[in-house]
Amino acid sequence: MTPRSPRGNTPPKDVHDPGGIRLQKVLAGAGLGSRRACEEIITSGRVTVDGVQVRELGVRVDPATAVIHVDGARVQLDDSVVTIALNKPVGVYSSMRDEQGRPDLAQFVADRTERLFHVGRLDAETEGLILLTNDGELAHRLTHPSYEVAKTYVAEVEGRVARGLGRRLLDGVELEDGPVRVDAFQVLETTPGASIVEVVLHEGRNHIVRRLLEEVGHPVVQLSRTRIGPIRLGHLKVGRTRVIEGRELGSLMSAVGL
Image (cartoon, rainbow, N blue to C red; front, side):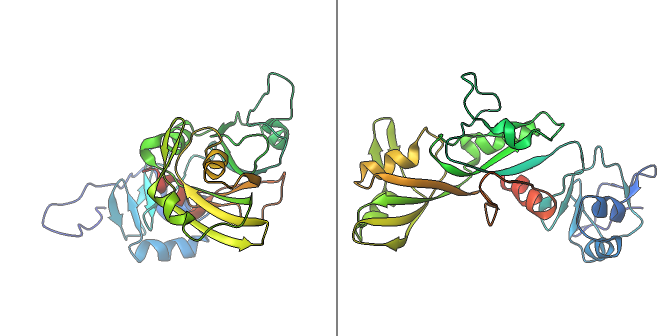
């Protein structure tokens, strides 16, 4: 059973595995919807297997080896791989096992059997989104500078933000360890003595947001990370976790080329 070629006369790679599992069952098992809904996803041309568009319902695949995308987003088929979002509280250190015995991330996933590690860091005084996973390749790509995964922070800072600050941050500010530019900046709220701002950047240097805002005259009072790539903190309460799965996980994997 050969999927159709979208262009030209060269036949596409045959992705059908006679000993595999029906594609719609695989998609349903990965959280893409009911079996019927997944059949509609396939017939509408939204699925690729190993880079080949599949529309036929009889195609079978091996979940252990097939690379499947829906609407361009990768589908995670290995149920032993898990990625978790945590809203880290203030006072907790970004370590799965703090050598000094200080509060660490392990307490929030103590009921998990997987060996998890954290993706990136937040300093102890910063709360917000941090990812925990046992997917080594995903973690590597999320932290590697070449993939430029944007991170969003909301900060309460001292002072009323001047009108031209956003342009200055977009143009770049020189710090002691080199220049830094933000990807986006906006003022969310302001009072005579303080402001709440949103900063988006893909830098990963230590305390980069705090150092940047202090350099431009607005020391940080409170700081929270609200987004990593396509993953939003949303309404996740401080100290709580949730598993990232389905389309949300697919969008994260696609953001780093998986």
